[in-house]
Image (cartoon, rainbow, N blue to C red):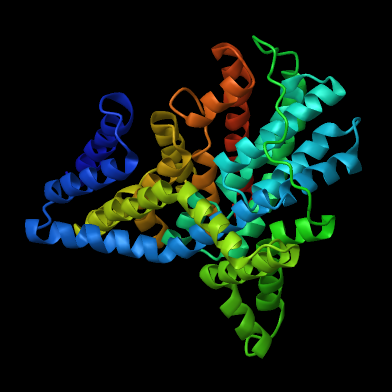
Length: 438
């Protein structure tokens, strides 16, 4: 009965978001949580309490990370640091190895920038290089966009990995390290390797000659740009090494454990980048705060969607359904990591949104993780990989790629959709290899 109700809930999400009503996922999660709570037998007087607790718990564990990430990303973009990173990479790799320059640029830019912001930011860079070197658009674009996609699906502080880390109580440093390991083969195969196979795809119309949307006269230096964009990464690496290689009772380890907490780490990063990309370049506190506010506005609806996904998770827990799911899934002849990937991939294809697919899967898989010996970080990455599977017409990213690069539907499927599929499958293979080794 409980599994049947979960199936009804998933179908209802599809009906509300995709097929019939096309309403915002924020509202859809609220409605589905109420219906699911009633169908699962939670007393009517307690349904609201479950929903409020779920939203509060989810917001409490992710709000600081998501908002801090958005603020840092906006400052990296507005200060011109992202442009400096891309230009530096192109000078290093040159025209002969332009794909590798695009790959590295996309990955470094993709770590601090949320996907949609990063996409819009790098398109002018891509177009400039296409015209400058007279190269096929897909050949230049896919390596950079594959890197952005991998960062979005695999690495905190991006929304889906950050939320999954909170739900599964995974270690952020460990997850980031494993994410980097998986990212390397994924972006190489989906970027430089795959783009060579589809580089002859041509746009239907001439691409617009887009220049950088904003001319910044006082650009930050190369070291400062890389340091500021990757500062959270540096902190994660330093704290993870300290915790794993120094004596457990060491004072340094205690400090590292404090700093490695996702919320504290991101607060430190916001303070550092405020100085390195703001105050040191003559920006006033008011100007920096305006940039931060704009960054948070960019993800406001995303925060609401993520918070409301916690409501459905809490309803499943309070009704006892989570425990039944764990018992049922334990007896399935399929590995939990593969199951997480399959559920996320199925929901991704049905719903379009990688974030919503990952969040919905997490609510179903969470009780299973607690009943098995599966590494929480690997489950985060398995679901993250599945949530990138086969982007198509119900994914905004599909249409952004199609319209920016003036492609037919067929060619968008051949390039963009297959690129995302390669990332997803390579991610799963990498997760299973890591599971076998650790």
